[in-house]
Amino acid sequence: MHKKTILLVLALLCLAASGFGQKIKPIYIDDPLPNISFGKMLFYKDTTAHLFDFTGKVILLDFWFTGCPVCIEMFPKVDSLQKKFSKHLQVIMVTRDSREKVLPLIKTWEERHHTKWSLPIIVSDTLLHQYFPHHAEPNYVWLAPENRFVAQTSYFFIRKDIMESYLHHLPDEIYNSGYSVDSLYKN
Image (cartoon, rainbow, N blue to C red; front, side, top):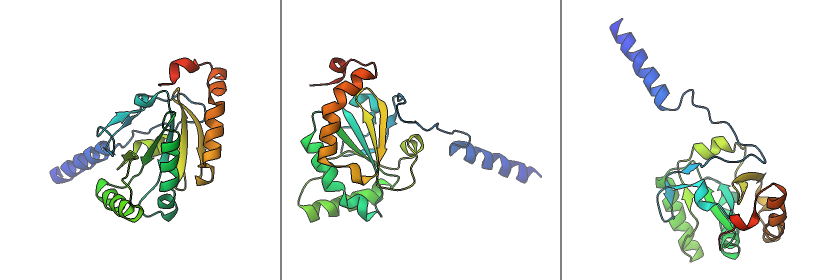
């Protein structure tokens, strides 16, 4: 009986450590965002960051995984958007895959495209996938500069003309939502 009790206690401790009972409430369109912590970051100035570190920019979260050919085909497109709109946009790649799976893929990608990888990647993610649930990848979450969830799209909407239009109309959208445009944009 003593062994069974010990096993039961150990099993409950394992469940508690894995987040059992700790459900993250999904965020919906137009919801304000908490200062979400981005852990386990690669290709960023630090290994962690927080959502509010990027206030003043549109954040495009790119949910992908290493076994997704369409996700990988989109890398040059999101990279070009980041470069073109860097003053007002921050693309952050998000994957559930581990660092050990991601780094070899990125190295191969760099060799194939003769370019250095520059987009920050969050690896081994569980938190953002809970905040922004989706059924297919690639999947893109658009966050407005005042830390508000504004859209969730497929790869079809990741285009220069759509980003240009969104950024062009963004000051009006921010103003209409009650925020001060001048206080959000970092120059």
